Amino acid sequence: MTPQDDAKRSNSPPLQGRGKGWGLSANRLAELHARAADMRRNPTEPEKRLWRILSNSQLEGHKFRRQSVIGYYIADFLCPQRALIVEVDGDTHDTVKDRLRDDTLAEQGFDVLRVTNADVMTNLDGVTALIRSALERSAPRWDRPHPNPSPEGEGLENFLPPAFNAK
Image (cartoon, rainbow, N blue to C red; front, side, top):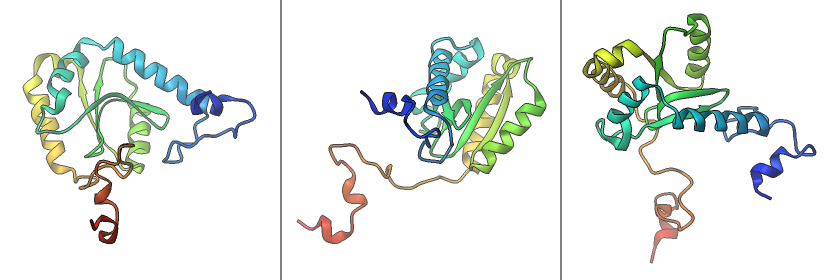
């Protein structure tokens, strides 16, 4: 049984944190991840076009993820290094809900940049410049590798006191 399956069992605690204390149940978290995976498999045309610019660290070397689960939300594009979320909005977005969502994400340290489908479809260069500008304004969240290095231990010497790194 995987840890995720174990967390879904009825005798497990009702709320599973996700390192940040999101307070989501394992079932709700699994639903969000399944929905995000489906959204990655079936992107809208504007999302496809923007992803061509953001994928493979093509934009100033910044790594972006598509359809990332953050708390109760799924972000269209996330640059974790800069805590920047880029949302591509269609005609049906509810501005009140969007504002609440943006405020909640801001409380967690994320900046949200919203662009419209029409902007992506007709002015991709302008959207790219806007994202570039937002990346330049945002401070890096970390200057070092991830605090949980790979199982092989690569990068581990960056986190140990010098005495442990002596050979």
